[in-house]
Image 1 (cartoon, rainbow, N blue to C red):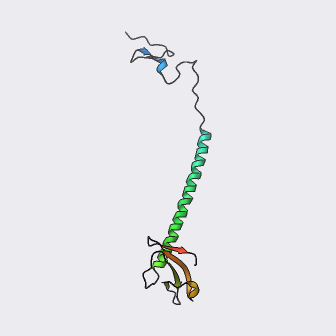
Image 2 (cartoon, rainbow, N blue to C red; image 1 turned 45 degrees about the vertical axis):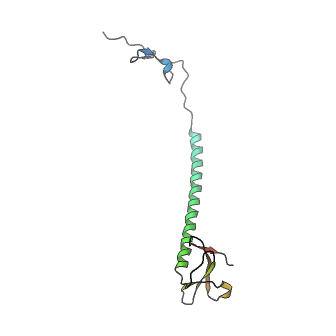
Image 3 (cartoon, rainbow, N blue to C red; image 1 turned 90 degrees about the vertical axis):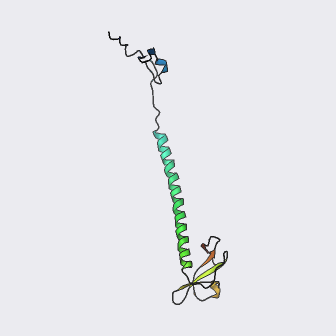
Length: 136
């Protein structure tokens, strides 16, 4: 004989053969309060806006850092490809010139003491990277 089925409004667990309506994480009768989900649209929109601004700011920082790195690379390429017949000392300032034959050369002579086309002044740092400095 087939066991008698309980009505739908009765919460009965057939495996444990117990009434377990109080153990359910959701309401089990019509008198229970309705489950209402919170509207998270405003929170999501605010969060998306904040994240977009933060990502854009970080992107701009990285872009500036890349531009500075590329500028430093170009300066170093320019100075290291110039002609010089001495060993530059770390921490000293040297001046880059272009001679009459359009060849670049590095010198210790200051721009006001020389008649060549001055391209810039550079200081060699401890990492052997040439940093452009303002005319001294």
